[in-house]
Image: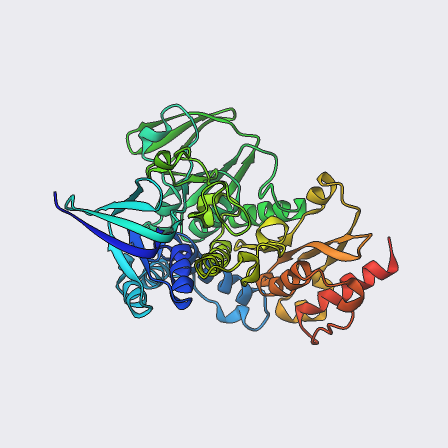
Length: 475
């Protein structure tokens, strides 16, 4: 085993989208940086999450939109080409080749070190490559942990032995299984149930609770459950899985609802921090736990260490990881210059979006797009609020978009400050409505000012005017 030593201003553990953004911003700020990665540069989002999952879903969505418009519907004479859909998915992942991402890293002036990185004390990371060679990295200013998260496996007897699918398997499968069992009714479970049912699998979705998307407004889970059933998915609520086994090629789950059989089982019950083997114990932190950070993403009591993206557990979303990366990197650059971090962009003194104004989209049919607090969350936090609800199908733009358009807009308004606490849209194509809502929630735009943000006609964005009228007219 040979070893060498290198020194950088910033060492970044993990070259997914979060780590790439940390490195890019610090290099633009005049610091040197190295990315440490044991898998593919670009990470989960590029190869196993956002991009492949949404390309699997897009064809189903386009066909549904065409079939909802008389005239276009008559032109849809066939079914989705599964092989072509999977090939398009593969093109977005570059067949799981990261050459283009590596080229970007090199062009951005960032060094890349392949191997497994582990903390080895303050400001120190030891990287071991595939041949067992070690490189000792020293960080002048900061180590940023951007190692992400992994799918969680529940403590069900025999489940690990049946070779269950995790989210990675669900987005990279080469063909549809005949029968797919899905454990969990969150966004991964709902999206993958939608995708694989449309691509030829018979899907059974088992949810322990009494509704899908439990962190969303109840109307969202109800709409998605109804849609999945219309697609042919067997959606079951209140189901506890107690054991799993293989019976030949079949997976057999023992549940509170009896035995359920399938060819594959996807476990989509949540995620856990991917921090178990990165040497946290060498700096007095608990391996496998989310990193405790402040609003500049600095780890408590360790001014040289940052936990960014899924590694801190705040919001497990790609766009929020990138947001945090910009925030953390700006703070690192400011501190390296001897400046206060609260003087940097994405300041520690500003309200952070990952506390109460996180946007997210579930790409099911219908889509669910939401930002900020739900009505239940506002009530739990004791905030004075009023809930506005309006059928999106009543909007002229929605009737143009699709015949018989069905959807719902829900706004939660702070009745004392008269600003939006949260907004949820449920319906076809509503993802593109979300950023306007995000600006309104993050910016705490007064309701009185929103009247002057005039929506174009006839677009679905006219829903904003109807919500304002609902607020004006009272209950």
